Image (cartoon, rainbow, N blue to C red; front, side, top):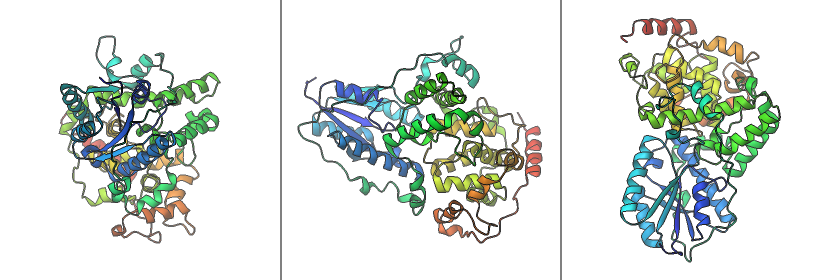
Length: 474
């Protein structure tokens, strides 16, 4: 291997320069580093909001590299292996570095690429960085994988977590740069249509913004996190899921910030650390049981007669935030305006779809895949299966959230509902009105419409769900 042969640093969902093991290793090798982003069939197949947000993140990474005197080379092709091979031929690169990901489609792609490149004499090396604990390193005392969260938390909470790496001080440039595509030409936000303009003000874009978000939360939010995180009408959460999903910040950085807060006596810090480990648990399960992303984790649920017709009118009412159940509708509308949804809202809308409407969780999971800027393959899948009852560590089938009493409990003054629902208000909140700017025009909705009556009442839905569960064939 030539001391002057470039290293292709293949960025994916790791859009940062600090605490980046693969990037740091490339920079420390003393050889030219060519940062690359490949827009292949996997990234092109993302839903509207995740693909748009990914495009914004790639642009922010390009700006960060430019500030360091480097560049981000953009290339598009259906097969990432073909794109990398072409770049290797153009640049004389003898190494390709990247950060590991864990969803089944990416694992299959990366294994194929690593094997092919190594057979061709190219160093192909993957690094950690997306997770604190590699899924294959955490085992039960009997050698299996954890299927319940609390034992998983107890197993890892005392483990040493690597200190975050600093941003490399020098990025060696090649003698000549290969050509790069134009990011705007990829039109990664095309499917967002007019919704992009509505959601954009709510985006906290890039590594610097992610660090600021973490710092602000640790200074002002983490102390009350345990109590406030369930109140959707207040800023009680960190909102870091948006940045974690694209690797604009790392769980290592968040963990060590949370540990410092805990040592300072901030009451909510341990709950914050547990939420970071909940994310790790989702990836642990996706690694060991990849079926969680597409099929019932508890396979006996394959026999349950869920509705699987996404075209049904009541499913469309759910998607539109027109169920007549205020907590459900407010949460769905928050998602269209901000690209995110409060965690309590996610639990309520998922329970309502899968239990009150007896609709398959996959329909909801796929809708979130299209609408969330913080979409995460592991967390989204586990969250939906947890709510439906078909997943690991799931909510019991007989636990059916009552969305009306949940609103009474977590939104007593109706601040959340008023912020997102315009119908019936003489002076609707500005964010409630933005919803009508974000949705497709063909939905034909207006803030002057009357607010709908419930398509399925809380009590009727619960009774119907319990009857279906009690008559199940498993």
